[in-house]
Image (cartoon, rainbow, N blue to C red; front, side, top):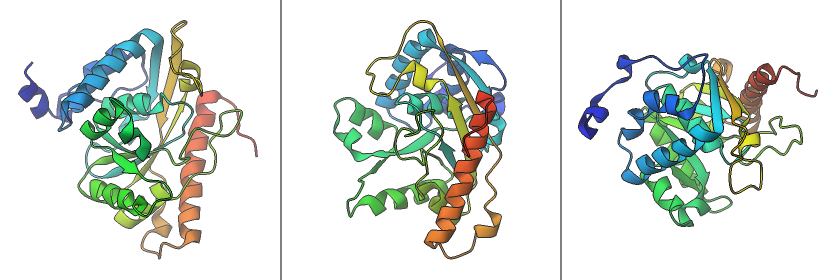
Length: 259
């Protein structure tokens, strides 16, 4: 199939992945076409190379993919266990027919090779603590208003909990959703911390790691929409988002989170 043909295919040609245990080669069959929707060559290259590596090291189980809207602006909010999460969450979103844009720390745009991938993927740099940090928020708002999928790890870093439960979230995802009216889809993953533990540079190759992703229904923020975005409103919305993510994670793990 030609590149032009890949770009002109639509989600109507297949259904989202659901309830399967599979490797990344299976994800490619569904996601590769979406990976070519306006992203540059470095982004395509990174997906091909990284997915081939992960196909050898992991298996995927996905649930709730249909909860991610087929079109229109949306915020996807996920827990954060490993530096492998952006890659695996991208695979999950691609399998659902959406190409995510990430808010990510600006230092990645200074790293060799990685900076080319970030630019090519049209991701959004966040200059934490700098006067230009507000620019990332404006870019994210513009993206969802243009009908794009913006993916955020509200914890703004790997989970600080020793047992892997989500930490308190930052308010960015809630602010974007409340200002624009787009839905927030909570997502939980489990297993990426075994594939690429915190501090590791290379994934564990054997045995193949089981990675599970589940997306929930949109977080109910209806009573908060249209209100002034005070700290109390934003913190309440964020608490609901993180509670939804935590509940999904509890379902994957089969244990209740600490009170």
